[in-house]
Every structure is written in structure tokens, then in C-alpha cells.
Image 1 (cartoon, rainbow, N blue to C red):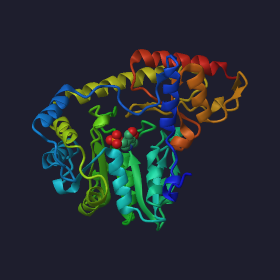
Image 2 (image 1 turned 45 degrees about the vertical axis):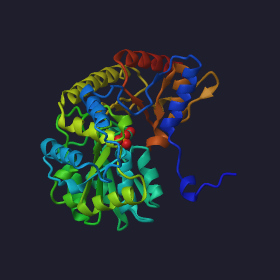
Image 3 (image 1 turned 135 degrees about the horizontal axis):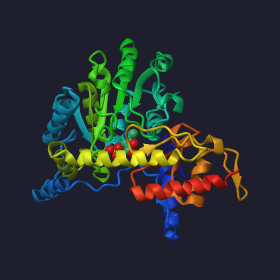
Image 4 (image 1 turned 90 degrees about the vertical axis):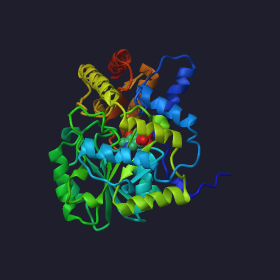
Length: 400
Ligand code: PLP
């Protein structure tokens, strides 16, 4: 008999992982599946970072690490924030965790109380609402469609704020949409927040380094709201280190202390000592690798946009960061059938594409709050991008 807690029973399984699982099953049957469903760079961790980890093992970095992170790593993060983002933080304001995911969850659990509202621009990263559920808070979705480049306006933000609002989660560059807020757009949102002194911002900047508009803009740059902003970042995406599990926050002191207390006092303790040494090398070492990966993603972005634009039934939006394209806006296929199977939703379409085209992607509805879209990751080779889109085109043309 299953006796899950109500807290657990309320959580939804991740559709992203469900698609990955299904595609692995097909692969196990010998089918050549192109996986565009998973959210991680396909590059391997740069050599100098791996060397630093090997050295840490040889130097016996094998003991419990300080809960909020090694001082050297926290200093490297402060230097990064200063040099790359023009932001002043002290090491005491940094908390290192097991990935940005844990960082975000720490913050939500630290500041959101029962029934308090968290504004989540939709389309959103699948984990935000689930984390809010864990905190017994309430997600308030603010939708921005393809016509708005998937970015919310200051007016929408203003309208969504109530006396119960505790936080806004702002993800730029965004997963799933790839949209990037410009400095003016972020400033306009910060102007709204300036008036609402009880609203905090969780700025998820994990895709900072995969950005095609040039400079990354953080909402923490605006002094008037700075004491209410928590920057979340990490090495997973920009340095191809998803498996090392290092993320961090730069936060007002009291939030940093709370997250450290939650993480260390009662929950997971400090992040892996070896991974922290690797992350330190990532931030202090040569940054050429970051630029090379970014350029490769940009080339692939250009390729996938050009190919998808040739499919008449799709509306395509050009992502400006990250490694996902979210707009095949595919609702023109809803209601169409092939072989006795009718596609009613984007999840149906994702399953149809997996089974008919052997391309794994994720439907936008349940996972990301945007039912008309599907998400494709282009963190795969140019050759596979070309092959995958050709297969998608053939499969879509069969629907009538
Ligand atoms: N935030 C967003 C928007 C993400 O897409 C992801 C990972 O997919 C994370 C946070 C979590 O990053 P990490 O692997 O460092 O936990």
C-alpha cells in the first residue's frame, strides 16, 4: 500500500523525464531516436576543470565541505559577479548548493509561507510551480505568448501583484523559450517592483553564458530593488558541468543565512568538495571554452531556426539564449490525424513525433504552461539537427 505524504502526492512527475524514458525504451529496441528532449549541453567538461578536480582528489579534499561553500569558491563567485556583471557581493552573501535547482528550492522554502503567492511568467521551467507547492505557496502564472517573444510586460506584472505576493521568479535567458530580456525590459519590471516593497525576485540566470544578444543583464543591477533580489546561477550550463552539481545564490544576507541554515543545519550539508574545486577552476580559469560553446550553440540556433521556418504549419520564434527552441508553435496541427491517431495537444504531438519521426521533444502544455508549443533542445550535433527536422517535417506532413 502506498502511503505517500500529501506533500509528495501533490507533486507532478516531470514530463521532460517521461519523454527521455520513453525515448530510451525505443533506443533499447535498436531504433535510432534523436533526443531533443533533455536540458543539458552535449559538450564535455573542459580539460582544465577536470584537472582541478583530479588535483582536489589527490590533495584529499575528501572531508565535509563548509555548508555555504569553500571560501575560495565563494570569493571566485564574488569576483565573477564583479567582473562579469558589475555587482558587488561579499562572500557571506553567497551560498553554494547541489545545483541551481537546489538553490532555487532553498530560496523558495526559506521565504515563501503557506498561501503566499509566487508570480511565475509562463512559459516557465517545469520545476518552479512544484517547488512552490512544496512550500505550500500558490503559483500565479502570467502568460506571455509568441507574439510577445514570450516576455511579460510591466503592466502584466503590476496586475498580477496582490497583497499576498511574496516573489517573482524571472528566468532570463529562459528555459523553455530561449527568450532574453533586454536591459530596458528588465528595468521596466524593476520599476514596477520598486513600488511593491514586500515582493522579492528570484532571478534564475543559469543560462547567462548561453546568450546571443551580447551582454547578460541581471535584475540585481538596479539599486532600488537590489536588497530584494536573489541571483541564482551555477556552472551546469555555461561550463558543461551538469553532473557536477554546483549552483549558488547571491542574496541579501538574511536570505543567504536562511538558505545555509536550511541546507546545512537540517538537510543536505555542503556540496561535493571535489565539484566545488572544479567550479572554482571554472570561474578562475581561461574563459575561452565558454565562448566556444556559446558560438557552437548560436550556430546550431541559426541552423534549427532556418530549417523549422521551412515547415509551413509551424510558427517559429528566434531564441536569443539557452539551447532550446520553444516555438514551434504547432497548434495548427491540433485536431489532425494520421493512421487513426488524432493529435489533440502538444503532448500528443510530442508523442506522435517520438513514435513516427523518432525525435524526442517535450510538449509545452503540462510541462511549461504553454499548450500550443513544443520544446526542442538543439544541444545536439548539426548533422542530427538537420536529420531531426527533416524527419519532423515528413511526420507533420502526414497529418491531415
Ligand atoms: N533553472 C533552469 C531554468 C534550468 O533549466 C535548470 C536545469 O535544467 C536549472 C535551473 C537547474 O540547474 P542545475 O543543473 O544547476 O541544478
